[in-house]
Length: 165
Image (cartoon, rainbow, N blue to C red; front, side, top):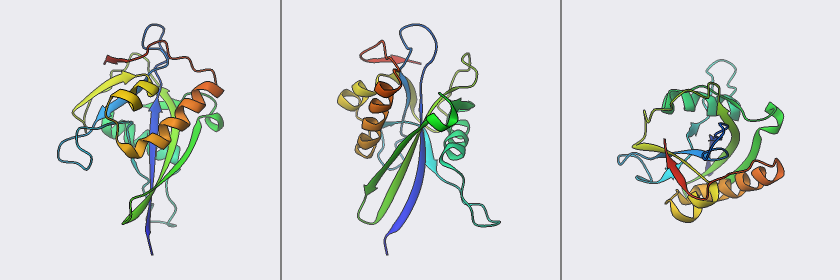
C-alpha cells in the first residue's frame, strides 16, 4: 500500500502598495534538505493530534509552518472559504504527496519574514518563479492553481520578475 502524505503550503501574497503588490513570498530550501537550493512556498506536513487521531486543517498547518519557518503570522488573503486555492497530487513512486494550497497575507504588513528554516527569501511573480527561478518540480501543479486563483480573484501582480525581501 502506498503511503499518502498530506502537506499544506501558503502562497503568501504581498498586499502593500508598490512594485511588490501581488507577488508571492518564496523561500530557498536548505542544502541539507531534499530538493536543496530550490524555491518554494513555506509549508509542511499536516500534524496529527494524538487525542482523537484528527489532523490539522490545511489552513492550520500552513499558518503553523509560516510561524515556524518565517516567524510571521499569516491570515487568509480573502474570506477564509475563498482562500483555499486547491489541491495537487504528486506520485513520487515510494509515496504520494497531496499538496493543499492556501492564499495568505501577512497579518501585520510591517512584519519582516525571517529565513529561519531556509537559505533566503524573495518576493516573486508566480509565473516568473515557474519559468525562471528553479522551483521544485513538485510545485508546478500548485503554481498553475495559484495563477488561476489570481485571475479568478483579480489579484494583480505589477512586477514580471522578483524582488529581494
